[in-house]
Length: 336
Length: 303
Image 1 (cartoon, each protein chain N blue to C red):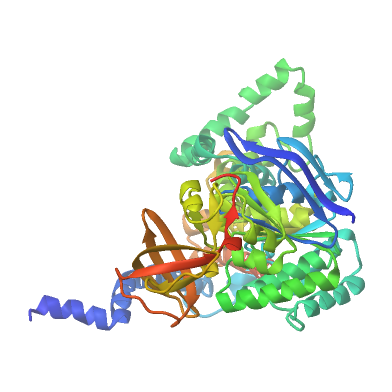
Image 2 (cartoon, chains in turn cyan, red):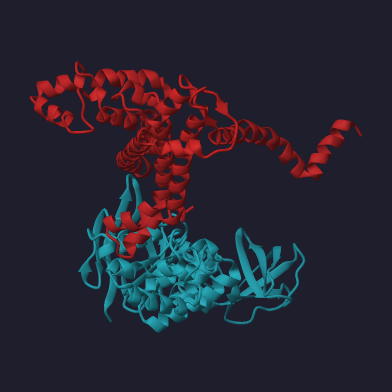
């Protein structure tokens, strides 16, 4: 498989701040790749290095085998969908979309049908004569998308493009983006701080923390086998057990992660069953969340949370509950 | 319940009333003092002066406007408009890079220095500045001296011997008038252009580059169109201030009159208020035409 974007030991320092710190990363052609991390973790800076808005302090960037550092953005065959879309306010939607083609010197008669086709692709046919200010919140990212895709980039960079949308619209756009990426077969590099978004859309995810990639892999990989407490907590929620607690409850003698939905909850009088790990403790909170209820207990001084189907069990606060899990669900981690 | 409390509830229930109350004084001020005076002026321009008695005939006539088209008056108007256009274009050309630097690159104390440098000339008296320029431009002034020291006196002489714009010295030529106009009005161009450039989001410039535009193309297709309302605002200042000014050409320049001087003389010594009024309508018409043209060309599309 061809490598679309390759970052080799790339760092970007702003004075003493290491915004991107020794990042190595390969993104394949046609891959949907998510850069996931909390704000300030370096994922957007990484994207800006690929786009060319910023230059690395050290390291090497290649786009389809071509050295990219030192190359200005207008010489790179990548396009960006900006976080706040950056639509040109003095142009119509059609002029916005056709901008890249106009810059390339295409005649009006050539670029107008292409722009219209790009607008149709993002389901905005007939909106060409509007101004960006006349569009709704859900239409603006579509224009930004059409404006980038009309140039037929080999890599599309997306900087939290759905961050400003409400939940319903966001879910709809996620589906459409994923379908569009499959249809076009180009690489998408997608920056987000929303782990649900990253897991549901991406082929592979790189998780950023403090300028470094702490883990990369398929969504199932990073969710099922977090290598550190940070990943376990940031991607979904997790119960992190100390080596002592884990070993005492049938797990490995290491920092261990256990997902809440892998735990079932019994009354203290019920036997846990053979070959299962378990812990008892008083219930300190029940959080009703619609589809699931989260039950929090204190097992000694370790706090454990179980997620069960709503209504599957009821406990009063302070009542002792028995949490039971399969030992396969325990994931030993490399670092706390 | 006391009356004051009831009064404050009244404004709470009818917020429009409070707005009206707050707006009434400025509306009255603008309506009577400003627009009223303008209408009175307009009315005067439709009267005429009796040539023999020197008395103003208060009857509607277009005779006074007809007088505007006399050769000497047309020359005054042409001269003033040409000067105003030259001053405006020059101010825009000088102001743009300064404003661009201030808006995009200057930060913190550099920016404070910029504001200080642009605003400070506005704090000192206009007359002092114009007289200072008269000395600078005079035949015995520093420019002549520097040109002599640099053995460039011939260049200065060549410039001054240019027909129409030249003269016996810089201070007695259109070149001098033009230089002083540009100096005096430049801040009024810089500030609105800088404000407009300040409002151009940085990510639009990145987006243009991302879509393949070189810095030059980005400037032409994104930065300039978005800064245009600022340039138009600035040019309204420089253009109309030059159109109406009568002090600068009086102090620095030759004896040929500008609109402002014509108005000053007509309403003073000559007592020809109708023609003075007709003269002042000219800049208003020109500004109206200018704005209509700017709007047509899309200068305000980004607003």
